[in-house]
Image (cartoon, rainbow, N blue to C red; front, side, top):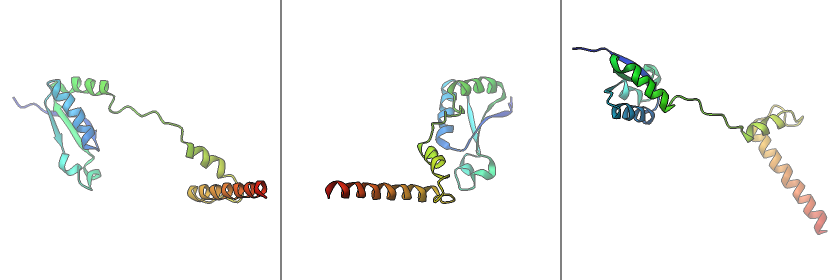
Length: 124
């Protein structure tokens, strides 16, 4: 009997797809990967990634397993220290309009100058 295949997930990265595929196969679900080799070239966006497919009868069970694995869960964003630095320095009059790297370098130079002045005052 010829069963149709259903795409249950699409991946951009082979290791992630391999992890899910291994889990499904360990659960007894036969998997097929469409566009695997094409997706691993530089033009992977042209085909929309690797499509993990299973038989239509196994699709619902496979989706539940993938959901339990939390493969597609969004990572919790960690607050960025550079984001805070960016917000604090972009409003400084002399540094307004400069890039983040320039503002960071300017701050380092300012700290070095201040430390040098303090050292000179204490030594003399």
